[in-house]
View (cartoon, rainbow over the protein chains, first blue to last red):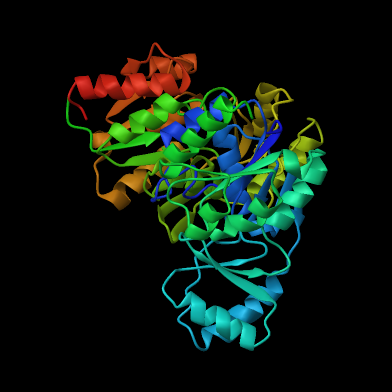
Length: 227
Length: 227
């Protein structure tokens, strides 16, 4: 196994517990790392930046499922189009009881919704209507997002920016929204609470769940001399 | 000593280390608490909300040094006037090399500046000019803020909202900006890295610094049956 030079790590369900609270074991595990950690999440730029401050990870991260990238403290890239999500939200609201999360003015490119509707049916309807969006359920929220971006397109750009080969990235996550970055990274590991599909696409699946699973993955990678 | 029913807790330097990274001992200490923790900080609403998610504390908090309060996930109160801070910033910029932090669109009521100028001289000049602002140095940033608000006015309103008497609050912090809430709370404790003035106004001063000091304070309060 080649040496890993950077990690791309999901937040909710991977570093946190099921209530989104940070797991102490995950915080400890992060402190063992000598390689940069790129946070990768469906959450907002502001949320992700704050997490990077508290965890001491670089201000290089993927927010809004690839719609927003941070290249440094002062350089944010908006790569997706909120207008097409707003249009889809309006059209789908006619048929589904969509309820937006109140993210004040913090969300630049996608729409976060409560998980109170039939996502499969809404996805089918969006396709029938030819809407250029993707609807994803992270188990924490449902997102309507521009289908041109995802955590994979985000990772590809971040890797280029950092001048680190994608094969030298390890991706760690828990949900289907992590799949696009799993397809690009050189090594893939999922926590014990992950979706079936993500586990099937993993090189290593932790026995432990949530942040304890993340800590197990880091220990395993260190034991295998990948880190 | 009366039983403490809630804590008001500063973030930077109190729960974090000097680089603003969350201290594992502080995270563990928070998990021992059965009473609500009201975060109280000079940082933005979005930053503070994210910290509350990661720490599992209520969405009731004091941001922007009392300029912004959160009463719940969906109820934010803006209590200070950014315009007077912008005016002071403009006037003081003529004489001091003020550099704003790039907080995108996240700051509602105060201005955060880099610590590259003479705060004492700038404060004197603001007084000479009769500007209705206060300039405070939290050691993490310098803030120009509306002088009608501070962490004390914030705590008074939050206590009322929570229907908990101020005397049943314990305040925990590290810098002079915590003094206004120390003046109101029934019990006051400061971490080892605190300002001289805050230590002088504390019922308990931790020997340990930063987040380890916070953990020491919680253990002490539990041992004294305050919590």
